[in-house]
Length: 419
Image 1: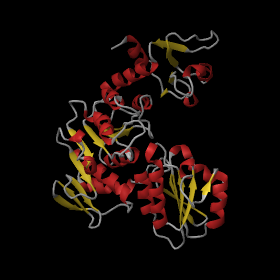
Image 2 (image 1 turned 90 degrees about the vertical axis):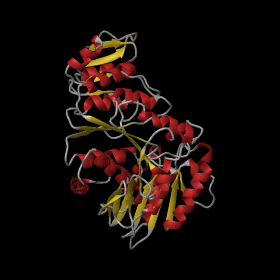
Image 3 (image 1 turned 120 degrees about the vertical axis):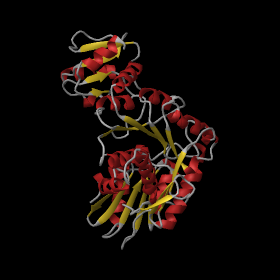
Image 4 (image 1 turned 45 degrees about the vertical axis):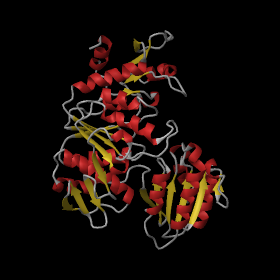
């Protein structure tokens, strides 16, 4: 083991951070340089918080008045990843990895929640799934457990492979793929990049959504499949009849909720639990602990109006699914739709498709974001406050309001103006 890596691991930091705002006493800080800021600029701030030490670029000049132990390395990000790799080698836990174009975090939470009823489980925090976020999550979670449930994200080819090098997986899962991506020209290129989650030779269990099993990337090996609409899948949830099929063997399956897009996530989570030799009785007991997660179809009541906060992120598939799964109500159905970003040349076509589905499923449609401007005869707002004021005027008792859009739309800010 590299001496500096060993030193960092043996320092006994309380937590590891890449965000200076989160640093507390005895934390160790990695000064990463990103597109928007440079962690080196916050060394004085973390010193005031009595941080244990900071890992910095070896060539960075540090003013003498900054009183904190400094560990100089060639590349802070690579060093962080190497520290996480070494720290994880001491863990006896089996590692479950999840990737996909969407539904990664919800699936991760479902798997961790269900497994937690029978085993000791740790999981990566929120959506810490990037080249920097993933290793930080690894360093901060309890690794003395039976299972680690790990979310893996990417922006370009090769990044999933780097995460798998940090955490070689026992079980790997792809949730779903979009037919386009702002980096890749087509779904074949995207699937090749996501397929890197299976790249370690020790990954014995490879699970994919049956919807993507026809892609060229998955023609080279035996991949287990899950589905809620294809009975030929190895793990198939028959929603209408509430039956779960495991390699053709059926089990009665009482649905813990009705939203079809979440049930697809649940089918993959149940498949993983069964592959971890968990009994159906224990799995069904775990259903009682499942819940919606922050800003992911999260239901809250305000003045007798049901709000569905589903604004953590959005793409055409998840937006259309959300529209079709708005619960029945005595009052109106209202959709607040933010832009779906990252669609490139498909943006106008897909926003029009979303709008048509919305017209079929709701009574009022309120739009926010530049991507809606090319669609005729829509109600479009330029800021959160004016949108919320209009919403205040039209909503009444027993109405239900879906709020759905990409993360950067920050649609949760609407609630600052709801009364």
